[in-house]
Image: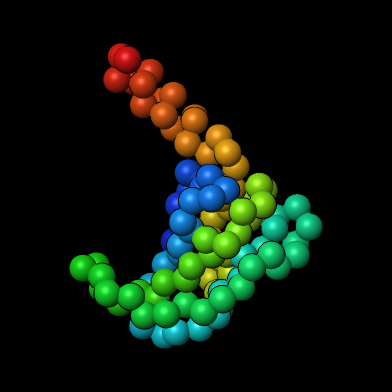
Length: 100
């Protein structure tokens, strides 16, 4: 899979972007996993990267809590959440494993 999104998730008002490997600009869609409805769409535009050629999409306007996937061409991202507590489990795990 070459469609990348933050698998930890996003808080509702956070900036939200996805990356697709390759230089070909195309459109992407954010789909609600529960309903299957497209809740946001936009263009993937070329982005500079130290890791090779990528196109980047911005879906920061998506504020509605839920679980989503991103589709572009034949690629589909792993599911990710938009929720107020998006980082809580990760922060708790970091604190627990570091002895805090």
